[in-house]
Length: 462
Ligand SMILES: *[C@@H]1O[C@H](CO)[C@@H](O)[C@H](O)[C@H]1NC(C)=O
Ligand SMILES: *[C@@H]1O[C@H](CO)[C@@H](O)[C@H](O)[C@H]1NC(C)=O
Ligand SMILES: *[C@@H]1O[C@H](CO)[C@@H](O)[C@H](O)[C@H]1NC(C)=O
Ligand SMILES: *[C@@H]1O[C@H](CO)[C@@H](O)[C@H](O)[C@H]1NC(C)=O
Ligand SMILES: *[C@@H]1O[C@H](CO)[C@@H](O)[C@H](O)[C@H]1NC(C)=O
Ligand SMILES: *[C@@H]1O[C@H](CO)[C@@H](O)[C@H](O)[C@H]1NC(C)=O
Ligand SMILES: *[C@@H]1O[C@H](CO)[C@@H](O)[C@H](O)[C@H]1NC(C)=O
Ligand SMILES: *[C@@H]1O[C@H](CO)[C@@H](O)[C@H](O)[C@H]1NC(C)=O
Image (cartoon, rainbow, N blue to C red; front, top):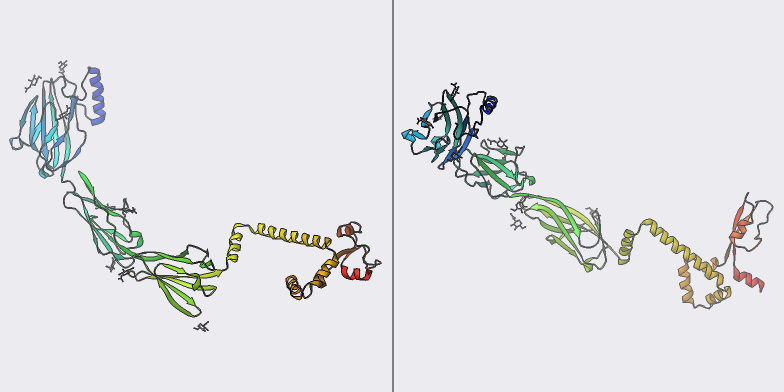
């Protein structure tokens, strides 16, 4: 029965079934099947290459013949070797190169040369009470593996953004059928208005370069048998300054205005994105005069140097390679510590809370004042006021904020009259406001505020 068969017939029924499968797979049904795992095999020059072949049949066979042929495009097929049963008959020309171990139909090519590239045809003949034949074709390619590529950057000194161009060239010493691919930060680079590739893709041309072109570039080179990636290159691209900003370690910043406490040394920091790093200079503007006060990214405003309450400064950033510069103005306002504290409180408290607090304070103050007035004997007050020395009296006067505090002194009565007509405009009783309101008619009411001066009243009584 079949030898070295990947589908050995178990019974004739199975054989017929297999025949149907062959019919489906190959479109032929000869009772013999020859199969190859791959129709294309990539070999490496100088190494051994194994061309695996499987075959199977389901008829009784006396002789098994295997023949290998080689063909190149536009040439006649060449006989390589053949076998019947176990005996191999090689072409003497290729005796040392091709090996087969029948009934195993697989072919070993050793060593593989570029001239070995082409199609290999294997033909299997089974001879029983009839002869069956089948063949397969395998395409073999031969390549040298890729050596590690090297990326060459032109110009190596770098290029200025929007002005300069850059060319990355991928150089590979060894390897055949090379396919080049450019990677930026590990992802493929695609053609774009600024990116272009050479015919082979082995050079990447960027014209003009921009800040966005900064990255880790590498060249990936592949061929059928290998792939290699270059080391990462980071092209030098000069750009900036961008995003100039001033910050300080202390103080309150609102847009371009810094509010700082008096007596507090403040360090200002100017920064902008650029390559190479910017050179910074600080300019102070006082009235109409401007002068450079410092070079470098930091500026310390010392408290003793703060002569004015408000000072304008300019931080200027200059990139000496791109030749571009940027500047930002800012104002420093010096406040007293108290104001600063208030500002901080205002930040932490809500406006409503502040209003409530102030209102409460006023209400309590009023209550205390009223209580004090209620329980203090008038005479004592007057005596005290009269007994005060001139300086103290002045102080009190200044505190009240009036021309004469004594003019305002007295009991204020809030009187309501039920009707405008017929009722004399006289205080009926010296009552509290609440009593007065409760006893009144609500139709038309006139209110009047009457000031009693207790000292005078007491004088009259005396
Ligand atoms: C091949 O082997 C079969 C039996 O296995 C035998 O009958 C046949 O004669 C052999 N053929 C040759 C050419 O040796
Ligand atoms: C044929 O021989 C190779 C080694 O030369 C072996 O790897 C392979 O499995 C064999 N094929 C079969 C079907 O026995
Ligand atoms: C082949 O030989 C077998 C016996 O070995 C026989 O049964 C069968 O009929 C033959 N087939 C043909 C087509 O001659
Ligand atoms: C950059 O390339 C553009 C177009 O490709 C060209 O016009 C320009 O002269 C190049 N600039 C430099 C500095 O080589
Ligand atoms: C580029 O490579 C450097 C180290 O080689 C790494 O620190 C940096 O994060 C990389 N940048 C990106 C964008 O992958
Ligand atoms: C070159 O690269 C581009 C983009 O990666 C790709 O579309 C194109 O097929 C490549 N050309 C060659 C010849 O490899
Ligand atoms: C600033 O200069 C302008 C003209 O340059 C002048 O009109 C103005 O009076 C000057 N102001 C001060 C404060 O010197
Ligand atoms: C640019 O400035 C740097 C300092 O930031 C300095 O080292 C360098 O020499 C300058 N280059 C030129 C061309 O002026």
